[in-house]
Image 1 (tube, one colour):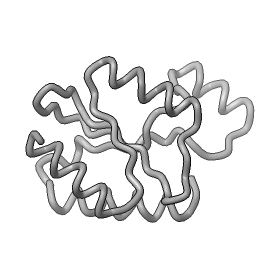
Image 2 (cartoon, one colour):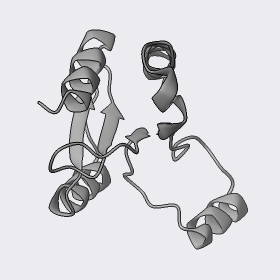
Image 3 (cartoon, helix red, strand yellow):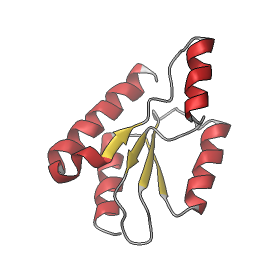
Image 4 (cartoon, helix red, strand yellow):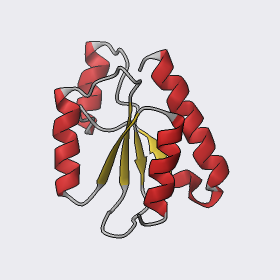
Length: 117
C-alpha cells in the first residue's frame, strides 16, 4: 500500500473507531498487500489469502446487505483486475462494495450504510 493510501486508511479507521466505538471491532483491515518473499506468499495463499480483497471489511449487516467492503484508493488510484473480480463476486453474494478516495467519502459511505440508506 502506498503511503498516501496508508494515511487515508489510517485516518478513516481512526474516525470510525471514535464515531462508532460499539462497532469498532467490526471494522477490520485485510493485510493483503505488500511485498513478501515467495515462501511467505505461498503460505498465505495456502491459508486462504485471495488477491483483490478490499482493504476494509465492515462486518455489520444493514438492510439488504450482509456487510460493507471498502477499497481505499488515492484520487489517481485504479482497481486491479483482481479487485474488480472480487467486487463482482461479493456484490453477487449480497455485500455492498465502496471504492473510497477521501476521508469525506469514507464518512459518507459508512454513515449512509449504517443508517440504512
